[in-house]
Image 1 (tube, one colour):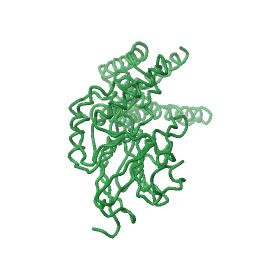
Image 2: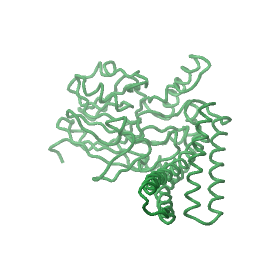
Image 3: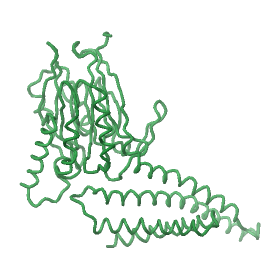
Length: 409
């Protein structure tokens, strides 16, 4: 209760400050009234959803996530506005003291300066405000196909030109637009890749979230098969189950559902992709994440019966596993495919110039291709979304990787 009181007081304080900026910048009462209505509607909806809203687990339901997203959008607008005006108030306070003691400019007043700064603050704050709204409206389904070509000295010749499609972090419990998801599935199939890999997090909380989408995802195609692993959300760890048996049944249901979709689920095990006399070892581990995330992944067990000199592709949901375990392993894993980070669903990416997201504060490898010790990892930015129901700058991704053997055309 104390946290709610503190939050509401802080929210109201930000609102009062922003309202003063609006009154200074705009003389029209309807502008002030519109802001107040929006201000209290967003707050009321947030309190209602988090108090009476329905959620099957700790991960936000669709309605609650939208309440959170709208609140985040408005708070961002308010905070940026307040930062500008608060700095101006500090300047005016210091200037007033200086005037009092030194007697300079007895008619100390900055009405035009204040109006200019209010308009500047509101204009700058409108940029992330609009971006966050766009992210919820369209950005979350702004699917991008990102293509890479990776060369290896020891790639088996039969696999030269072999094409992989990777998707990750579906988070089906967040979907709210069937037409957009159908478009994305069609986009995946258009790539006509040799093999399809899904690197975990099919659901948010429970297996049942995927039921409405099972038939659609079953239409995914790849001539050499569809393979999958589990992510941290797939285990049901974010739900208060009535019993451990109920939780385990949910996981078994998810495994069965993956099978019905057509995925070969690899759990601390391996498969071989074979072309003629050449082969690639495909290794899949259960979730292994740094910090408080589940560490069920067992790389040693998964690779027990493969040869050290096999060409290896590893599926591992969390990229921290690559940094903390895989790179230090005696075996050389040529390519690791991960997801998990979502690129924080927010950031700035301009190819060749800038690539940044708050995800970089937590993960060294958070999106795209990285190479260390002669080994590659691709961190997929995710197919779905979670928490904030949108994406800004970090778009949902379908990865297409072509394997090349050095020296061959």
